[in-house]
Length: 109
Image 1 (cartoon, rainbow, N blue to C red):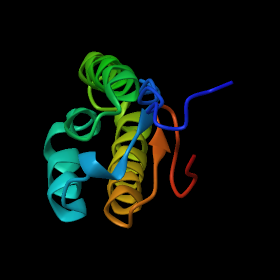
Image 2: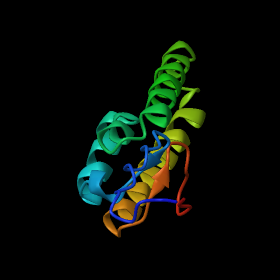
Image 3: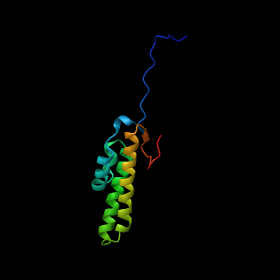
Image 4: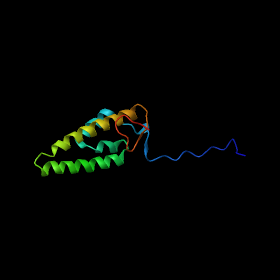
């Protein structure tokens, strides 16, 4: 028999879930994403996606430099996708929804 006065232990937090208490202003995230790329993901907890985006940004920027600008065909669309995605993820958190480490655009957990 279980004792009704016994309090269950608190749930173990899932490191792959980002909760609304980590929400940041979506406009701030948008501005950071425009100027700093994947670093915007880091400020609200999507550190795995943030590190991957930073690595991709560096590689695409290097390709752009090495090809005398031709690599911009890949670099600028990547930046646009990161900016839109970071803003939408921040907006979901601000609205009280949870997101995962690898959620994209309007999907939530």
